[in-house]
Amino acid sequence: MFPITRMRRLRSTKIKQMMQETKLDVSDFVYPLFVDENITRPVEVASMPGVFRLPVDGVVSEVREVCELGIPAVILFGVPRDKDENGTHAWGNDDVVQRAVRQVKAEFGDDIYVITDVCLCEYTNHGHCGVTQGEQILNDPTLELLGKTAVSQVASGADMVAPSGMMDGMVQAIRRSLDMEGYTDVPIMSYAAKYASNFYGPFRDAADSSYTFGDRSTYQMNPANSDEALREVELDIAEGADIVMVKPALPYLDVLYRIKQQFQMPTAAYHVSGEYSMIKAAAQLGWLDDKRTMYESLIAIKRAGADIIITYAAKQLCLNNYFSSNSG
Ligand code: PBG
Image (tube, rainbow, N blue to C red; front, side, top):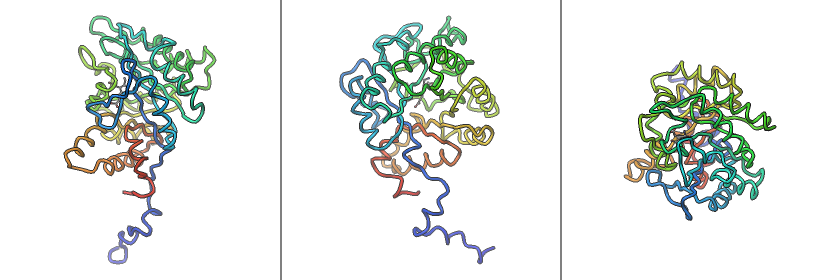
């Protein structure tokens, strides 16, 4: 007890690093990339300063930078030229993500791990994550399309697929489709506990995936629930998920913590667009330091149990060498 015990003894800069329980490392990061078929040069996303939509031909140079920084993985989202009722351009051999993946793999091979997001919302003209009938989003007819999409992405060279549409049975459907084509060794990272969140707002600018009616609350989770998240994760594991994800991250650290404790699965957390943008916006106003606040957010996510962090801030933190010099 005080005055014998003084916690401050171990907080001097001399020993602080050694006492640090959680360390953030560049190897924790997955960097999201938006590939847009409608542009010829990179276009900054208005609501996400520092994040760019890239033309298909611009992906290679971006990935080169990512590799040079030591970031091990990217996750690709596509913005197609044409959208339709069923999201047909999610699975064509010459569609946007398939083309981008082929270019990246031809250039970098195993030097970069390529994950592809498997969802229809960027490809449907109504912006929902599944096939619709009237204002209903149909679960089962969507599954087959997700399977096809995953297979086409893997056939183009994707190393891992990440279904994000919150359809029941999506992991099983994708696992079966991949296995039937012989892709038994390709892992699935499931967006298992994905909440119907307002924090996705800026992403929908970036990926041009706003919906034309309703919202996503009939398939994404209610922010008030966390027991339900455990059930979602349990089902996805049973269906064959190799990695489970919680999304968003910072407002759901309790959920992340419970999931990691309960299942001890490789667990990812998605530090989403809104989490990124609100820090950037405050920084633009001079209200806080964006890099330090970003670092603090990400270390909190890791401390809560994330093995993998998907974040738009990955490059910026690496460029500023935030790992050795800033322990908080
Ligand atoms: C597609 C998808 C979304 C995000 C990732 N995949 C948007 C959504 O569900 O509305 C959000 C990512 C972010 O906000 O950074 N279903």
